[in-house]
Image (cartoon, rainbow, N blue to C red; front, side):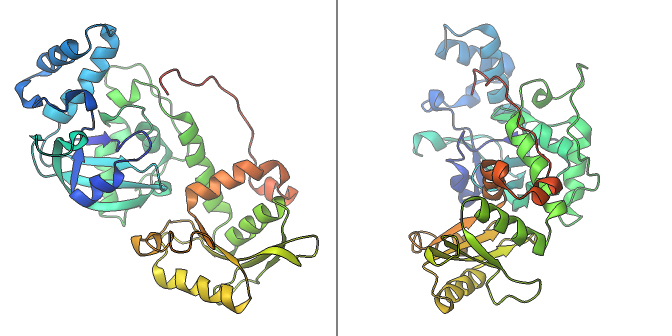
Length: 347
């Protein structure tokens, strides 16, 4: 059995279709009219690729051909797939239950697919060891993940409440040995890996009431006067924030913060709406480290002009955007250093 990385679009634009359709798609717009099953091996795939892209360098054609071959021929029924989300701090995990299929009547981007049984559609990224996240950070759209016993560890996670049985907190750099997977042989998204590491540090040091304290520090850095509820039952109000030196100006914001590993559900969202009304706050902020269930996300458009929601990814972004203005004590608990690097030409 094998473990495969499959991406649902550069910006996560195909994630909903992947999960709702119980399928993974090869969203390669160059072959929307071609049934790829005519290729019986890697050389056959490469021949199709060469016909479609006659002027591309051989190395690039080999890279693209390897990804199509992996989806078409190398992936087998019973293998597992991981689909990192671009819109939330989660990774979907599923089992391949069908062969490659071509549907000429489907929308062009969804004609090449495989049937999937989703085992968990939203495993928190922080549940994975940093070394596994390193392999999942490959820029490739489809590739096998072998390094650090990845396939066996992810299967054990399923029996361990979706927690890694061996959590390595540092991302190890792959060697040049021939046994490395394709994912380890290409560039990885170092920015995403850095955010994963920062996220792990945040949840270690600001769990529980500490996360409300971190959110308060961000709001203070943005110029708000704040009130932080004491630790314990808060009736849906963790933080109150308002403009002006004394907090007498608008906007008036009511904040609810959840640091647990379960996505927030609609009753918690409704509790925030009620809390806003009780303190006469015009706006609300709902921070849930583990993200939100669909019941909450369906409410977001209705309350767009009054409520914002932050998940782990959003909170990390806010920390980075306001880090230089955070309280010194908070920065001491969360020591970060800005690093500049050259952007990849492939991005």
